[in-house]
Length: 325
Image (spheres, helix red, strand yellow):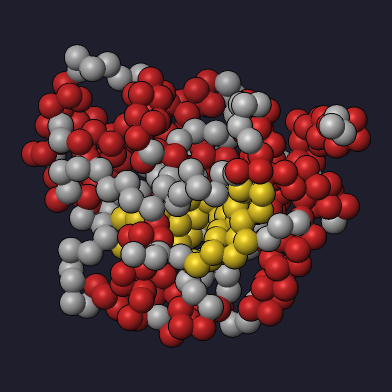
């Protein structure tokens, strides 16, 4: 079953023209606002958040500082997953606090809910938190952890299409650098487009007849403690609802989860498609990055601070001195 539409371009110019024309034409009322997500490998990087990707399972366990012989092993797979995600956020805040950084405080209710995780299936507080994981109260904290590279259940998007294009180009170039054996002509970078309100509204309508349905949530947390989120015009989506009743981890891509519902519910879908994937060959990644620099989009802009400036200098040097063969 097709869960999205594809739009392919052969040149960076055509790719940018396609993206920018679409954004210009469709930035209309709130219900028709579109958001964008850049990925380095359009075939491999589906709409699955980092915490739910099978290849990251061992990394989550290590970041949470848990061991296979702990009582944690007595939980079902889904409760394990939720607890791992909570532990990573909890440790992120604790270490940041010890380093003297200004961090939001983790609400006492959530600490208490997870303190007796060994008795999770008999712990009413834990069940309440898990039922709607992640709760809205924790999303700003989870978003902060994600922006600094930790795996979470959130998928990050941008209201700005050029920001998404930048991250797609940067990621594609990093993938090529990490594995020079890959043929750039056989791989594509991608920019996903989605109408988040269309998705959310369609799912809410379906809930009227299916109370156990997983929900698609959309949030743009406060940006005062997250300068990267501000600079990138960011927002997040995630899937929530009835996790306590799930025995296995739900790790299907967002478009695959949402589209069967949207197909019959969404008037916008009949016009433009709720999910569209724009693709460009890796061979055009450096040209795309160069054009984005000319449009004022760089690491210095998207990650404010001296680190962003230094990274921009490195990328400019690469573009200026790259091999011509």
